[in-house]
Image (cartoon, rainbow, N blue to C red):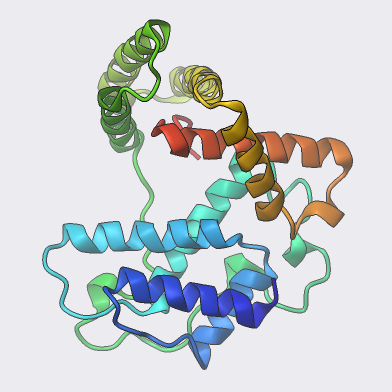
Length: 258
C-alpha cells in the first residue's frame, strides 16, 4: 500500500472513531502517519493503537473535543512494539523496514513536534504508561471471563480449560504485586505457558474457512517484512499473527506481559 493510501485509511478510521468528525491527516500529521507506514506498522495494528487511546479517553468521561491523530502516536507505537514482540520481530532480531535502510526515522524516534495546546495536557501526544503485572492480569481475567460468557467455544473441554486457566491467573494476580527476582521470572514463565494453552484453544475453536481467512490476513500484515525475513522466520511470524487473529476472533487475551 502506498503511503498516501495508508494515510487516507488512517484518516477515515479516525473520522469513524470521532463519530464522523473529520480531522484531516495533513501537514505534520501526514508526516507522522507516513512514518508509521514507512516503519511497516500494519493498518490493523495502527487501528489497534487508535482504539487503545480512545478506550482510555472514554474512561475519563464525556468527550470534550475530537481526537487528533498525534494524540494516538504513543499508543500506536506501544501496540506496534507489542505486535513485533509477539511475532518475534524484536529490535535485536530480524530487521524491519526501518532497520533495513529506510530514509524515514525509526518509529521509536518519531515524535509529533510542538508542545501540547493548553487544556490538552491529559490527553496530549507522547504520554506512555506502562502497565503493572497485577493490573495486566486483572484485565486478562476480565477478558477471559467475558470470553467464557459468550460461549463461542461450544465444547465442554474448552470451558474446562478456561476455568482452570482462570483459577491460575487469579492466583497469579494475588501474588504478582510482591514477587521479585527468581520468583517473578518463574511467574512470567508460567504465564507464558498459560498463554500457549490459550493460543491452542483459540486455534482449535476456528474452522477451516476462518483459518484460511486469517492466513491471508497474516500475509497482508507481514507484507512489509516478507522480503527481509528468512523463510523460517517468516513462517514463525505468520503463525504468531494467525494465533493473534484467532484469539481476537474468539475473545481470548494474550497473557504474557510484554
